[in-house]
Image 1 (cartoon, rainbow over the protein chains, first blue to last red):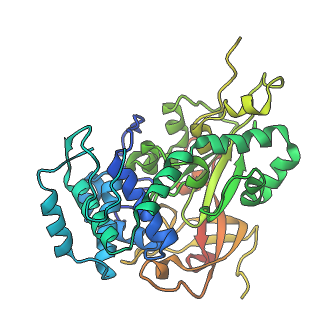
Image 2: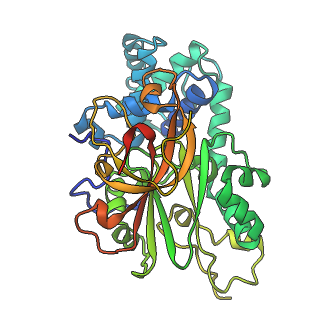
Image 3: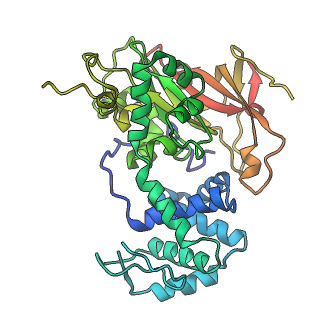
Length: 102
Length: 211
Length: 93
């Protein structure tokens, strides 16, 4: 059975939406973070990122945005490799509750 | 946007305010924690952000323009794209392997990554949203002519359309055809005709605007 | 270590949907094409994806397919599909 990321020839695909969005700062910073983790620090491999993205539940994979999939996969791998724990991240997220950002 | 390099604070000065989304919060939480642990440095982040902004399709356009004016360069580009591009002083370290494929009167190439979003970022910058979309990834392999039509590109039936699905380490760069009526243009002017979309293969290069 | 295939060889793509990470799209599995380029040997992504060292390296080939063969209904007879495929996914056709 096809995996959700394996899209070539997927039926009912619809027209290609050509409108492009300006990348927000968090998206660029996620991209920057991945470049450091892969190229500079060799902590994550691109193959691992792909694998982690592919393991996102199908329904979520299809509805999340591109960088939402990336940050989800980065979080999975960072925890898997023991650099951070889910609890640490959750606690830090709580401190950001109600915070505004550019 | 000035950033406080204190590892304790991941926030920028408040300017354009918005409530952060769930994923945005996860991203900032992870970044701030990794900064504290020294896995990331503010300097490295700054440098990568600069790289993201600095690498644009203009780099690829320079390569194409050079290939249009210099047949020997084009031959080297088609044989070993990374080495040829390095001749122009463009940093190719971030590229795994690059393959240049040439559009001609008889052959039109278009590139996709159906499994994810593989793209020659080191030479074209960040891929457009549509390249990464589920619909492009689904449809361009099974109906490239239909997708190209949506981009305003119509190809006669006797042109061979080749779709490259980037499934491994190779990244593909399309060398679009040099438009007619450009014999009088210099290399820099030619580069201005080379669009990002023509180097992905969903469009042809622009034709010069009549004076 | 030598590549099993050379340019011009006809190859059929194996059919498999393992639960692990792999880079052979479903739409090409079971199809037959021609090797156009031997890219060389690369570390195995199916191992790298799980922190493995990706060894032994596998030969990677650019394989060309007729679009009319890949898809049931396809309107332009000359059109092609090119894909990079790792040697373990290929068998002689």
